[in-house]
Image: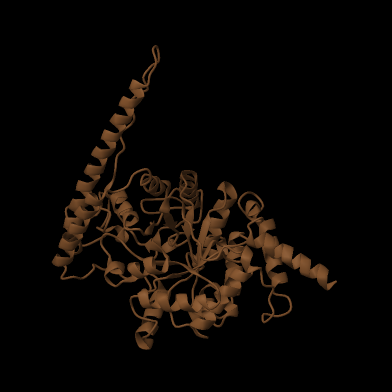
Amino acid sequence: MAPIMAAVVFLAAMTAANGFIAPLAGHHHAPLARSYAKAALQMSTEGGDDKPFVFPRSMLKKGKLEIPNYMGVGTMAWGDKKVGFVSDPKYKPKEGEFNPADLQGAYNTLMDAGITFFDTSDVYGYKSSPEGFSAEQLLGRFAEENGRPLIGAKYMPIFWTKFLIGGPWRAGRRAIAKALTATLEKGGWAYVDLYQVHFPFPYFGGMDALAEGLSRACDRGLCRSVGVSNFNAQQMREFSEKLGKHGITLASNQFEYSLVNRDAETDGTLAECKRLGVVPLGHTPLAKGLATGVYTASNPTGGKMGDPKYLFKDLFPVTPIHTALAAVAKRVEGRLAEEAKEEQRRAFEALEDGEEQAPPPQLKKISTTQVAINYVRAKGVVPLPGVKTKAHADEIVGCLGWSLLPEDVAILEAAHDAYKVSTGGKTIQRGKDRDPMKRQAISFGQKSGGWASQDWYKEED
Protein backbone atom coordinates (compact mmCIF):
# COMPACT_ATOMS: atom_id res chain seq x y z
CA MET A 1 0.00 0.00 0.00
CA ALA A 2 2.85 2.36 0.81
CA PRO A 3 4.28 2.25 -2.75
CA ILE A 4 0.83 2.97 -4.18
CA MET A 5 0.35 5.93 -1.86
CA ALA A 6 3.83 7.20 -2.73
CA ALA A 7 2.95 7.01 -6.42
CA VAL A 8 -0.31 8.88 -5.86
CA VAL A 9 1.48 11.56 -3.88
CA PHE A 10 4.15 11.89 -6.57
CA LEU A 11 1.61 12.21 -9.38
CA ALA A 12 -0.51 14.68 -7.44
CA ALA A 13 2.48 16.85 -6.57
CA MET A 14 3.86 16.61 -10.12
CA THR A 15 0.49 17.65 -11.54
CA ALA A 16 0.32 20.67 -9.22
CA ALA A 17 3.94 21.69 -9.74
CA ASN A 18 3.87 21.50 -13.52
CA GLY A 19 0.60 23.33 -14.00
CA PHE A 20 -1.49 20.46 -15.38
CA ILE A 21 -4.26 21.74 -13.11
CA ALA A 22 -3.75 25.26 -14.40
CA PRO A 23 -5.98 24.79 -17.45
CA LEU A 24 -8.77 23.82 -15.09
CA ALA A 25 -8.18 26.89 -12.92
CA GLY A 26 -7.95 29.06 -16.03
CA HIS A 27 -11.37 28.20 -17.40
CA HIS A 28 -14.57 27.04 -15.77
CA HIS A 29 -13.41 24.44 -13.26
CA ALA A 30 -11.91 26.48 -10.44
CA PRO A 31 -13.68 24.52 -7.66
CA LEU A 32 -12.31 21.27 -9.09
CA ALA A 33 -8.85 22.80 -9.41
CA ARG A 34 -9.02 23.97 -5.80
CA SER A 35 -9.96 20.46 -4.67
CA TYR A 36 -7.12 18.84 -6.62
CA ALA A 37 -4.60 21.39 -5.42
CA LYS A 38 -5.70 21.00 -1.81
CA ALA A 39 -5.60 17.20 -2.06
CA ALA A 40 -2.10 17.32 -3.51
CA LEU A 41 -0.94 19.59 -0.72
CA GLN A 42 -2.48 17.41 1.98
CA MET A 43 -0.92 14.24 0.56
CA SER A 44 2.45 15.95 0.17
CA THR A 45 2.60 16.68 3.89
CA GLU A 46 1.35 13.33 5.22
CA GLY A 47 3.71 11.85 7.74
CA GLY A 48 4.47 15.14 9.49
CA ASP A 49 6.09 18.40 8.48
CA ASP A 50 9.56 17.12 9.26
CA LYS A 51 9.23 14.46 6.54
CA PRO A 52 7.46 16.21 3.67
CA PHE A 53 7.14 14.86 0.19
CA VAL A 54 10.05 16.49 -1.68
CA PHE A 55 9.51 17.12 -5.35
CA PRO A 56 12.59 16.31 -7.51
CA ARG A 57 14.65 19.49 -7.82
CA SER A 58 15.54 18.67 -11.43
CA MET A 59 11.88 19.15 -12.37
CA LEU A 60 11.43 22.55 -10.73
CA LYS A 61 11.89 25.93 -12.40
CA LYS A 62 13.38 27.80 -9.48
CA GLY A 63 14.95 31.20 -9.79
CA LYS A 64 14.01 31.90 -13.41
CA LEU A 65 11.43 34.65 -13.81
CA GLU A 66 10.42 35.78 -17.28
CA ILE A 67 7.80 38.53 -17.58
CA PRO A 68 6.25 39.04 -21.04
CA ASN A 69 6.71 42.55 -22.48
CA TYR A 70 8.65 43.46 -19.32
CA MET A 71 5.42 44.88 -17.91
CA GLY A 72 3.13 43.89 -15.06
CA VAL A 73 0.29 45.36 -13.02
CA GLY A 74 -0.46 45.76 -9.33
CA THR A 75 -3.69 44.78 -7.55
CA MET A 76 -3.32 46.59 -4.24
CA ALA A 77 -6.59 48.50 -4.72
CA TRP A 78 -8.63 45.43 -5.66
CA GLY A 79 -11.30 44.80 -3.05
CA ASP A 80 -10.28 47.87 -1.03
CA LYS A 81 -13.41 49.89 -0.31
CA LYS A 82 -11.36 52.75 1.11
CA VAL A 83 -10.06 53.56 -2.36
CA GLY A 84 -13.41 53.27 -4.13
CA PHE A 85 -14.08 49.55 -4.61
CA VAL A 86 -17.79 48.68 -4.72
CA SER A 87 -18.63 44.98 -4.50
CA ASP A 88 -22.01 45.18 -6.23
CA PRO A 89 -21.35 44.54 -9.96
CA LYS A 90 -24.73 46.06 -10.86
CA TYR A 91 -23.96 49.34 -9.12
CA LYS A 92 -22.88 52.09 -11.51
CA PRO A 93 -19.68 53.52 -10.02
CA LYS A 94 -19.37 57.23 -9.44
CA GLU A 95 -16.24 59.29 -10.10
CA GLY A 96 -13.31 57.50 -8.46
CA GLU A 97 -15.23 54.28 -7.79
CA PHE A 98 -14.88 50.88 -9.47
CA ASN A 99 -16.53 47.48 -9.21
CA PRO A 100 -15.74 43.86 -10.17
CA ALA A 101 -17.00 44.45 -13.70
CA ASP A 102 -14.50 47.29 -14.13
CA LEU A 103 -11.69 45.06 -12.90
CA GLN A 104 -12.80 42.18 -15.14
CA GLY A 105 -12.72 44.51 -18.15
CA ALA A 106 -9.24 45.71 -17.21
CA TYR A 107 -8.03 42.13 -16.71
CA ASN A 108 -9.34 40.99 -20.09
CA THR A 109 -7.79 43.97 -21.88
CA LEU A 110 -4.39 43.36 -20.31
CA MET A 111 -4.37 39.61 -20.89
CA ASP A 112 -5.43 40.00 -24.53
CA ALA A 113 -2.57 42.46 -25.08
CA GLY A 114 0.04 40.14 -23.59
CA ILE A 115 0.43 41.87 -20.23
CA THR A 116 0.01 38.79 -18.08
CA PHE A 117 1.99 39.34 -14.86
CA PHE A 118 -0.22 40.31 -11.90
CA ASP A 119 1.28 41.23 -8.54
CA THR A 120 -0.94 40.54 -5.53
CA SER A 121 -0.89 39.77 -1.80
CA ASP A 122 -3.03 37.98 0.76
CA VAL A 123 -3.60 41.31 2.56
CA TYR A 124 -4.82 43.24 -0.51
CA GLY A 125 -8.53 43.85 -0.10
CA TYR A 126 -8.62 41.48 2.88
CA LYS A 127 -11.68 43.18 4.39
CA SER A 128 -13.69 42.09 1.33
CA SER A 129 -12.59 38.48 1.68
CA PRO A 130 -15.82 37.30 3.41
CA GLU A 131 -17.74 38.50 0.33
CA GLY A 132 -15.30 36.77 -2.00
CA PHE A 133 -13.77 40.02 -3.24
CA SER A 134 -10.21 40.13 -1.94
CA ALA A 135 -7.53 40.75 -4.58
CA GLU A 136 -6.59 37.06 -4.70
CA GLN A 137 -10.21 35.95 -4.97
CA LEU A 138 -10.96 38.46 -7.73
CA LEU A 139 -7.86 37.44 -9.66
CA GLY A 140 -8.94 33.81 -9.40
CA ARG A 141 -12.42 34.62 -10.68
CA PHE A 142 -11.13 36.58 -13.65
CA ALA A 143 -8.75 33.77 -14.57
CA GLU A 144 -11.75 31.48 -14.94
CA GLU A 145 -13.06 33.73 -17.72
CA ASN A 146 -9.91 34.65 -19.62
CA GLY A 147 -7.04 32.31 -18.81
CA ARG A 148 -4.49 32.02 -16.03
CA PRO A 149 -2.02 34.89 -15.63
CA LEU A 150 1.50 34.81 -14.24
CA ILE A 151 0.92 35.29 -10.52
CA GLY A 152 3.25 37.12 -8.18
CA ALA A 153 1.87 36.53 -4.67
CA LYS A 154 3.32 37.72 -1.37
CA TYR A 155 3.87 36.38 2.14
CA MET A 156 3.21 38.93 4.88
CA PRO A 157 5.83 38.14 7.56
CA ILE A 158 4.17 40.11 10.37
CA PHE A 159 3.50 37.83 13.32
CA TRP A 160 -0.06 39.06 13.99
CA THR A 161 -1.29 38.89 10.35
CA LYS A 162 -3.76 36.17 11.44
CA PHE A 163 -5.86 38.84 13.17
CA LEU A 164 -6.51 40.41 9.76
CA ILE A 165 -6.88 37.46 7.41
CA GLY A 166 -6.97 34.38 9.63
CA GLY A 167 -4.65 31.41 9.37
CA PRO A 168 -1.69 30.52 11.60
CA TRP A 169 0.71 32.82 13.37
CA ARG A 170 3.32 34.04 10.89
CA ALA A 171 6.32 32.42 12.56
CA GLY A 172 8.76 29.64 11.76
CA ARG A 173 9.28 27.70 8.54
CA ARG A 174 5.96 25.85 8.55
CA ALA A 175 3.83 28.99 8.36
CA ILE A 176 5.01 29.78 4.81
CA ALA A 177 3.50 26.70 3.15
CA LYS A 178 0.29 27.12 5.16
CA ALA A 179 -0.10 30.73 4.07
CA LEU A 180 0.66 29.87 0.45
CA THR A 181 -1.83 27.00 0.56
CA ALA A 182 -4.52 29.49 1.63
CA THR A 183 -3.56 31.75 -1.27
CA LEU A 184 -3.81 28.87 -3.74
CA GLU A 185 -7.24 27.90 -2.43
CA LYS A 186 -8.52 31.48 -2.73
CA GLY A 187 -7.34 31.82 -6.30
CA GLY A 188 -8.07 28.27 -7.43
CA TRP A 189 -4.46 27.81 -8.53
CA ALA A 190 -2.15 24.82 -8.28
CA TYR A 191 0.91 27.06 -7.82
CA VAL A 192 2.06 30.66 -8.08
CA ASP A 193 4.84 31.75 -10.42
CA LEU A 194 6.50 33.98 -7.83
CA TYR A 195 6.20 34.04 -4.04
CA GLN A 196 7.65 37.15 -2.43
CA VAL A 197 8.49 38.13 1.14
CA HIS A 198 6.40 41.30 1.42
CA PHE A 199 9.07 43.31 3.25
CA PRO A 200 12.03 42.74 5.58
CA PHE A 201 10.16 42.76 8.84
CA PRO A 202 11.95 40.94 11.73
CA TYR A 203 10.65 37.39 11.41
CA PHE A 204 9.71 35.26 14.39
CA GLY A 205 11.94 32.23 14.02
CA GLY A 206 14.61 34.12 12.14
CA MET A 207 15.32 34.83 8.49
CA ASP A 208 16.97 31.41 8.14
CA ALA A 209 13.65 29.77 8.98
CA LEU A 210 11.92 32.04 6.47
CA ALA A 211 14.38 31.00 3.75
CA GLU A 212 13.96 27.31 4.62
CA GLY A 213 10.16 27.62 4.55
CA LEU A 214 10.27 29.18 1.10
CA SER A 215 12.57 26.41 -0.09
CA ARG A 216 10.12 23.78 1.15
CA ALA A 217 7.28 25.55 -0.65
CA CYS A 218 9.31 25.34 -3.86
CA ASP A 219 10.12 21.68 -3.28
CA ARG A 220 6.43 20.90 -2.95
CA GLY A 221 5.64 22.66 -6.22
CA LEU A 222 3.62 25.43 -4.56
CA CYS A 223 5.69 28.19 -6.17
CA ARG A 224 8.00 28.37 -9.16
CA SER A 225 10.34 31.08 -7.89
CA VAL A 226 11.05 33.17 -4.80
CA GLY A 227 11.39 36.95 -4.53
CA VAL A 228 11.53 39.73 -1.98
CA SER A 229 9.86 43.12 -1.74
CA ASN A 230 11.15 46.42 -0.36
CA PHE A 231 14.56 44.95 0.52
CA ASN A 232 17.55 47.26 0.21
CA ALA A 233 20.84 46.11 -1.34
CA GLN A 234 22.31 44.64 1.85
CA GLN A 235 19.09 42.91 2.94
CA MET A 236 18.64 41.43 -0.55
CA ARG A 237 22.22 40.19 -0.67
CA GLU A 238 22.00 38.58 2.78
CA PHE A 239 18.68 36.89 2.07
CA SER A 240 19.91 35.69 -1.31
CA GLU A 241 22.75 33.93 0.50
CA LYS A 242 20.32 32.31 2.93
CA LEU A 243 18.18 31.01 0.06
CA GLY A 244 21.30 29.75 -1.70
CA LYS A 245 22.02 27.41 1.20
CA HIS A 246 18.79 25.62 0.27
CA GLY A 247 19.46 25.58 -3.46
CA ILE A 248 17.12 28.47 -4.24
CA THR A 249 18.10 31.39 -6.46
CA LEU A 250 16.52 34.73 -5.57
CA ALA A 251 14.40 35.69 -8.60
CA SER A 252 13.21 39.24 -7.93
CA ASN A 253 13.15 42.28 -5.68
CA GLN A 254 10.21 44.66 -5.74
CA PHE A 255 10.76 48.24 -4.63
CA GLU A 256 9.41 51.72 -5.29
CA TYR A 257 10.79 53.24 -8.45
CA SER A 258 9.60 56.12 -10.62
CA LEU A 259 10.80 59.29 -12.30
CA VAL A 260 10.01 61.07 -9.03
CA ASN A 261 11.60 58.47 -6.74
CA ARG A 262 14.91 57.00 -7.96
CA ASP A 263 16.19 56.15 -4.48
CA ALA A 264 16.81 52.54 -5.54
CA GLU A 265 19.53 53.86 -7.85
CA THR A 266 21.25 56.11 -5.33
CA ASP A 267 21.23 53.53 -2.51
CA GLY A 268 22.69 50.78 -4.71
CA THR A 269 19.64 48.47 -4.74
CA LEU A 270 19.21 48.51 -8.50
CA ALA A 271 22.92 47.90 -9.10
CA GLU A 272 22.86 44.96 -6.66
CA CYS A 273 19.91 43.47 -8.55
CA LYS A 274 21.98 43.54 -11.72
CA ARG A 275 24.98 41.98 -9.96
CA LEU A 276 22.92 39.15 -8.50
CA GLY A 277 20.86 38.56 -11.64
CA VAL A 278 17.67 39.51 -9.78
CA VAL A 279 14.72 40.89 -11.76
CA PRO A 280 13.84 44.38 -10.42
CA LEU A 281 10.10 45.02 -10.11
CA GLY A 282 9.03 48.64 -9.67
CA HIS A 283 5.93 49.34 -7.64
CA THR A 284 4.41 52.83 -7.53
CA PRO A 285 5.90 53.68 -10.97
CA LEU A 286 3.65 56.73 -11.22
CA ALA A 287 4.37 57.97 -7.68
CA LYS A 288 0.65 58.03 -6.86
CA GLY A 289 0.05 60.47 -9.69
CA LEU A 290 2.99 62.79 -9.10
CA ALA A 291 4.91 61.29 -12.04
CA THR A 292 2.02 61.22 -14.51
CA GLY A 293 2.01 64.83 -15.66
CA VAL A 294 -1.75 64.78 -15.04
CA TYR A 295 -1.65 66.53 -11.66
CA THR A 296 0.42 69.69 -12.10
CA ALA A 297 0.92 72.99 -10.33
CA SER A 298 -1.35 74.64 -12.91
CA ASN A 299 -3.89 71.79 -12.82
CA PRO A 300 -3.84 70.25 -9.31
CA THR A 301 -7.16 68.42 -9.77
CA GLY A 302 -6.09 66.70 -12.98
CA GLY A 303 -9.17 68.13 -14.66
CA LYS A 304 -11.50 66.33 -12.29
CA MET A 305 -14.20 67.67 -10.01
CA GLY A 306 -13.54 67.95 -6.30
CA ASP A 307 -10.64 68.83 -4.07
CA PRO A 308 -7.13 68.63 -5.56
CA LYS A 309 -5.23 65.42 -4.92
CA TYR A 310 -2.03 67.32 -4.10
CA LEU A 311 -1.24 70.74 -2.72
CA PHE A 312 0.45 73.38 -4.82
CA LYS A 313 3.52 73.26 -2.58
CA ASP A 314 3.94 69.57 -3.43
CA LEU A 315 3.29 69.94 -7.16
CA PHE A 316 5.38 73.03 -7.88
CA PRO A 317 8.79 71.36 -7.29
CA VAL A 318 7.81 68.60 -9.72
CA THR A 319 7.17 71.10 -12.53
CA PRO A 320 10.48 70.35 -14.32
CA ILE A 321 9.49 66.68 -14.53
CA HIS A 322 5.99 67.48 -15.79
CA THR A 323 7.41 69.81 -18.44
CA ALA A 324 9.92 67.19 -19.56
CA LEU A 325 7.24 64.47 -19.73
CA ALA A 326 5.17 66.62 -22.09
CA ALA A 327 8.21 67.40 -24.25
CA VAL A 328 9.26 63.75 -24.52
CA ALA A 329 5.68 62.69 -25.34
CA LYS A 330 5.78 65.09 -28.31
CA ARG A 331 9.17 63.73 -29.37
CA VAL A 332 7.90 60.16 -29.31
CA GLU A 333 4.73 61.07 -31.22
CA GLY A 334 6.79 62.77 -33.91
CA ARG A 335 9.14 59.79 -34.17
CA LEU A 336 6.27 57.32 -34.45
CA ALA A 337 4.57 59.51 -37.08
CA GLU A 338 7.74 59.50 -39.20
CA GLU A 339 8.01 55.72 -38.85
CA ALA A 340 4.37 55.35 -39.93
CA LYS A 341 4.95 57.52 -43.00
CA GLU A 342 8.02 55.52 -43.96
CA GLU A 343 6.11 52.28 -43.55
CA GLN A 344 3.31 53.60 -45.73
CA ARG A 345 5.82 54.72 -48.39
CA ARG A 346 7.40 51.26 -48.55
CA ALA A 347 3.95 49.68 -48.78
CA PHE A 348 3.05 52.01 -51.67
CA GLU A 349 6.21 51.11 -53.56
CA ALA A 350 5.41 47.44 -53.15
CA LEU A 351 1.96 47.82 -54.71
CA GLU A 352 1.34 46.06 -57.98
CA ASP A 353 -0.64 47.52 -60.84
CA GLY A 354 -4.32 47.75 -60.03
CA GLU A 355 -3.95 47.37 -56.28
CA GLU A 356 -5.47 49.99 -54.04
CA GLN A 357 -3.32 51.72 -51.47
CA ALA A 358 -4.18 50.99 -47.86
CA PRO A 359 -5.52 53.92 -45.83
CA PRO A 360 -2.90 55.88 -43.89
CA PRO A 361 -2.18 54.44 -40.44
CA GLN A 362 -3.77 56.15 -37.48
CA LEU A 363 -1.20 58.26 -35.66
CA LYS A 364 -0.44 57.06 -32.15
CA LYS A 365 -1.15 59.47 -29.31
CA ILE A 366 1.37 59.25 -26.48
CA SER A 367 0.41 60.42 -23.00
CA THR A 368 2.71 61.72 -20.30
CA THR A 369 1.61 58.80 -18.12
CA GLN A 370 2.83 56.35 -20.75
CA VAL A 371 6.16 58.16 -20.97
CA ALA A 372 6.53 57.87 -17.18
CA ILE A 373 5.83 54.12 -17.28
CA ASN A 374 8.19 53.50 -20.17
CA TYR A 375 10.89 55.47 -18.39
CA VAL A 376 10.85 52.74 -15.72
CA ARG A 377 11.13 50.07 -18.43
CA ALA A 378 13.99 51.98 -20.06
CA LYS A 379 15.89 51.76 -16.76
CA GLY A 380 15.62 47.96 -16.74
CA VAL A 381 12.86 47.80 -14.12
CA VAL A 382 9.52 46.02 -14.65
CA PRO A 383 6.81 48.62 -13.86
CA LEU A 384 3.80 47.49 -11.85
CA PRO A 385 1.22 50.28 -12.25
CA GLY A 386 -2.05 49.85 -10.41
CA VAL A 387 -5.18 49.30 -12.48
CA LYS A 388 -8.83 49.72 -11.54
CA THR A 389 -10.68 50.19 -14.85
CA LYS A 390 -10.48 49.32 -18.53
CA ALA A 391 -9.38 52.90 -19.20
CA HIS A 392 -6.38 52.32 -16.94
CA ALA A 393 -5.65 49.08 -18.78
CA ASP A 394 -5.87 50.79 -22.17
CA GLU A 395 -3.34 53.37 -20.97
CA ILE A 396 -0.93 50.62 -19.93
CA VAL A 397 -1.39 48.67 -23.16
CA GLY A 398 -0.54 51.88 -25.02
CA CYS A 399 2.98 51.64 -23.59
CA LEU A 400 3.72 48.63 -25.76
CA GLY A 401 5.19 48.84 -29.24
CA TRP A 402 7.58 51.72 -28.61
CA SER A 403 10.37 52.69 -26.26
CA LEU A 404 12.34 55.72 -25.16
CA LEU A 405 15.64 56.60 -26.79
CA PRO A 406 18.72 57.42 -24.67
CA GLU A 407 18.15 61.09 -25.56
CA ASP A 408 14.61 60.92 -24.15
CA VAL A 409 15.87 59.34 -20.94
CA ALA A 410 18.54 62.06 -20.63
CA ILE A 411 15.89 64.80 -20.89
CA LEU A 412 13.78 63.17 -18.16
CA GLU A 413 16.72 62.61 -15.83
CA ALA A 414 17.91 66.20 -16.22
CA ALA A 415 14.42 67.24 -15.12
CA HIS A 416 14.64 64.84 -12.18
CA ASP A 417 17.92 66.42 -11.11
CA ALA A 418 16.33 69.89 -11.22
CA TYR A 419 13.42 68.59 -9.13
CA LYS A 420 15.77 67.18 -6.49
CA VAL A 421 17.62 70.50 -6.31
CA SER A 422 14.34 72.34 -5.67
CA THR A 423 13.45 69.93 -2.82
CA GLY A 424 16.88 70.00 -1.24
CA GLY A 425 17.56 66.42 -2.32
CA LYS A 426 14.41 65.04 -0.73
CA THR A 427 11.76 62.89 -2.39
CA ILE A 428 8.22 64.25 -2.03
CA GLN A 429 6.16 61.89 0.12
CA ARG A 430 2.53 61.02 -0.39
CA GLY A 431 -0.31 61.71 2.02
CA LYS A 432 -1.21 59.82 5.18
CA ASP A 433 -0.82 56.06 5.00
CA ARG A 434 -4.17 54.31 4.74
CA ASP A 435 -3.00 50.84 5.74
CA PRO A 436 -3.35 50.17 9.49
CA MET A 437 -0.94 47.22 9.23
CA LYS A 438 1.65 49.52 7.74
CA ARG A 439 1.31 51.99 10.60
CA GLN A 440 1.69 49.20 13.17
CA ALA A 441 4.69 47.76 11.35
CA ILE A 442 6.39 51.15 11.12
CA SER A 443 5.82 51.74 14.82
CA PHE A 444 7.35 48.37 15.66
CA GLY A 445 10.16 48.84 13.17
CA GLN A 446 11.23 52.18 14.60
CA LYS A 447 11.72 50.46 17.95
CA SER A 448 13.42 47.31 16.71
CA GLY A 449 15.90 48.65 14.13
CA GLY A 450 17.96 46.24 12.06
CA TRP A 451 15.75 44.64 9.44
CA ALA A 452 12.94 47.06 10.22
CA SER A 453 12.87 50.76 9.46
CA GLN A 454 10.24 53.28 8.49
CA ASP A 455 11.28 52.98 4.83
CA TRP A 456 10.78 49.28 4.14
CA TYR A 457 7.01 49.14 3.64
CA LYS A 458 5.94 51.10 0.59
CA GLU A 459 2.60 51.01 -1.17
CA GLU A 460 2.63 48.64 -4.07
CA ASP A 461 0.83 50.25 -6.98
